[in-house]
Image (cartoon, rainbow, N blue to C red):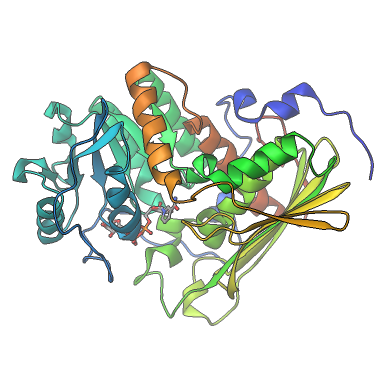
Length: 410
Ligand code: NAD
């Protein structure tokens, strides 16, 4: 393998990413065969199937905490984030924002919120006058993130925005600029940065427990059921972009970056969009991509909405091999380190603490004015990489990247 001397700027990643305009903003929107759907609009949805609400309202937070309004009461908000807020010391639930009044009332009652802590998408801007709300957590379909993040900053609130941050780097730049103008924090909900298995993997690679890094491989696949752009936002380009890459595959791209600790200098990719499958009328079914790092290491990523289930990360160094499967989910992680003839199973901690750890980091950062570990700039960086992946797939060329993840040329 050719050994390159990494330039310092290429090792900086987020710190180096400015908010200069990308040379072009292709993303999935300009990819061939992708039809445009209606502009995104926030609309109330039924209670997600299988939702379990708390039998009694959670106890008050133990430490000094900030009040958080949850925007969007879908599967991730109701089944992962809201139950975990009670495990955090530095955040508490202050309000909900939903387009379905009946669902919002049921959820608010279960969590012990008063009626005046329920907002609709239409009354959302009134949170400006609600001192109980310090921050909002936007957990809407991706195509709606920008609108609701910008309105939150106008209302003077801090923001956690779910991943992916937005569908174009231009939107990410707008959000970052608005947060700065309002002097409010912006965090992207990249929970794996707070999860013990992924933290352990970062530490092992940093300490060269595997020797110099050679290749990272990630696979994030599942088979979606029958659906169309009208029945499932994840299949609708205006709400989901190009599909599995922004949604599930982003965990692999993220792992490639936080495990290598480098920014790629080149990226190449391919996409597939099967004909005559209503699920893929507007989005891609599969995306494969490869990033080349200044050190000469590579990371290879596959993601699919029509592939047998996979949630896997492997890392091969010169002298050791690390595997995590599942690697980036909510729990059940497994990790194995192989060096020579020895194989070690590692159990660095309980993966489910990632949610409370992320919320506590945010709460403390707001209260103490400290840096966010997964800021808007990280979401912008990743959105630029996604744009480069689609551009490479569209043109059949390898895209060269600047240290801030913008493409050096079309
Ligand atoms: P979901 O379909 O379960 O819920 C989406 C919710 O958004 C709906 O229930 C509704 O309340 C609201 N909504 C408003 N307008 C809508 C519209 N036009 N169409 C559909 N829903 C609309 O989705 P989800 O899985 O909760 O995902 C929401 C966000 O959270 C996405 O950005 C997704 O990428 C992110 N997410 C992150 C993780 C993670 O592990 N970090 C996991 C799942 C989802």
